[in-house]
Length: 201
Image (cartoon, rainbow, N blue to C red; front, side, top):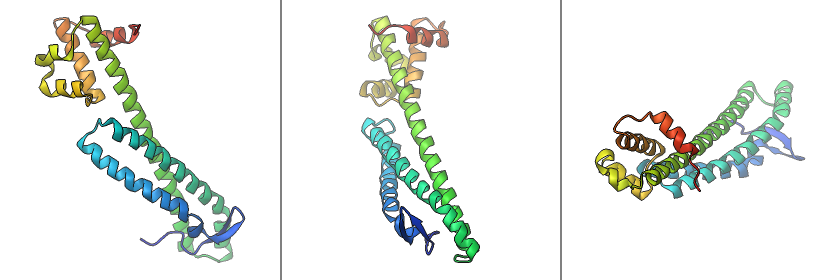
């Protein structure tokens, strides 16, 4: 795909050169990060709760946000010069519109990365919270995950034991164990609220 900003010359940081050339380093960094993110996302499809891959994804998203912010900042700095170049007739309407699309795409990409990072952080918080609830439930009942294999099923027991259960799976485990412990009479909301107030010490 041809670059949208090819042939547009502006001054960025005192350097008058092609916009495409001045953004080359940050574009290369973004491209590398996107490639690594695709790889990590593909691997996470096979193992969604792999902590090493999740940590890498978080790190890569933070890098992608940083690089995309730099690119957006440079494009926004160049915006006035590009508008003036268009008004003078130095660049055509097609180039000007292509530049505007580049700005909007960069802004959209940055927002998508921020949303992905926020979602990842929320999932990690839910995972931590549900793990803590489950551990408190085991401590309160003097039991372990193996004691509830008949209620949870072998697949969920294995996932919990191996530390590969998702936050939703852990939430399901807390609900099923809570019902089993109380003979099906537990109000799950009250149970989780009570578990959240139990002091770890």
